[in-house]
Structures are given as C-alpha cells and as structure tokens.
Image (cartoon, rainbow, N blue to C red; front, side, top):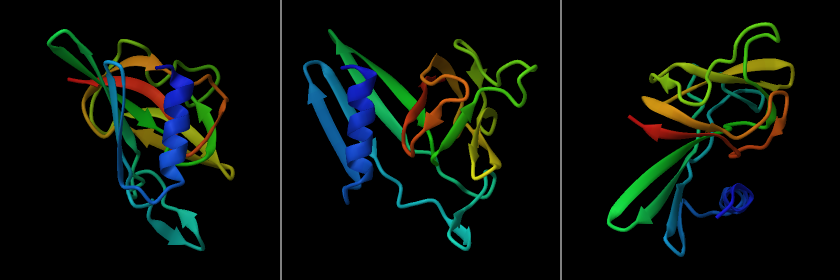
Length: 149
C-alpha cells in the first residue's frame, strides 16, 4: 500500500463521523483512531503547541510470517506549511534514524503567520520524513513515519 492511499484514507476518515477505522489489504493492516478535535482557545483559533494540540497517529501493521511490525505516523494537527528547521541556516529538528524523546520538537507548522512547534508524544525513532521543507500540509497528513522505542 502506498503513502498516497494511506493519506487518502486519513482524509476520508477525517471527514467522516467514525472514531476508529481498520483497513486490511493483503498482509497490511491499518488502524486509525480519530481524536475529537483540537481545543479552541479564542475566536475559533486552535490552541498553540504546549496548550494541548493533539496530533493524530495512524498505525500500520505489516505481518511477515509470524512477525508483526508496527509503524506509526506523526501527522499534522493543523493545515499549514511544514518547516523541518527553525531557520534556513540551521539543521533540521530531526532526520531519518534519529531517536526522539517525548516532548521533543520534530518540526514547525506555520498557520496564519503563527509558527507552531510540533512535538512528539512518545519516545520513537524517525524511520522516514514524508514531506518536503516548505511543503503545504493538510490536517491529518502523515509527516513522519516512526517506530516506538
């Protein structure tokens, strides 16, 4: 199953009233759970990071023989522009192979001229960065594929 298909499933689930969804294709099984919605602080503006913006995670399980491997995705909690670093002349927050601690910033999403630091919700290892720097992202779009450690 390719990433575009997964992103399409995330979008469909996002727009539906379903709270949880499981899809199986061959030996690949995807389970998605939807959080209610980000808290609203004032005037319809979503809360800033550190104020409880949840990020949705999708779980993909690939079964090879009797071994089941679980991959998680850090997804975008808002619509915005993805930035891998705090400035153009500094290194990216995370790269493939990096081990990330809970609460560590993994990227910045710009929305309405506000820079929102996206933080990891658990200890993990970055397996893949799924978007390019300065790319526009949608709510629920996978940003990183990670493996819990």
